[in-house]
Picture 1 (cartoon, rainbow over the protein chains, first blue to last red):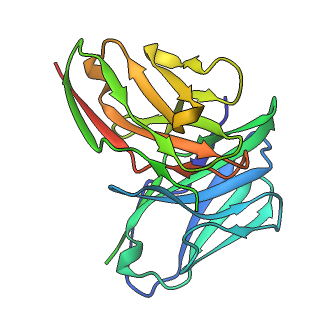
Picture 2: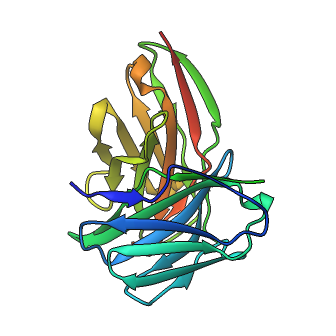
Length: 114
Length: 112
């Protein structure tokens, strides 16, 4: 069974703080993703990574950065948290299986910025 | 830009009613299509997927979806819903096989 874990289920931070969200997958997947989930907007891709030390911007990268130093770990960084980054953050991983990709999701981190 | 539309934002049904949730996408090439479900307090999990072959695909828990290429649609169906189907449902399209685009989600409430 694929397992994607996220470091915290709930997090409360203050405006201006630097925030680290950690994600670990245990299935040696090449690809990892960070999304944010907001009511009525679905999931929006922030950043993704195809390999160690490689990253690509998604649809809403502003205010975020990422780090992938090891294959199994993908970190999302909010350099200076703002209240509009209050959201549910989902990590996912995927690999190529029989010609297509399927994404496996972690449980999410609900971040509140006050 | 790619887009995925789920027109029903909130659906309320009684148990045993039939369900159909709409999903339309805007990409014209070959796509992989998915429905994910998120039960209250749980993580997103795959319900079913389509990438080629029979356009009618069956998933877990009695769900099925039909891919209609001419309509750019991938609607989710279940003949008889149960209270345990109460969840949020997301359609996703992967036009380049790895980058996914998600719809805004449909919240389903099934009344016992």
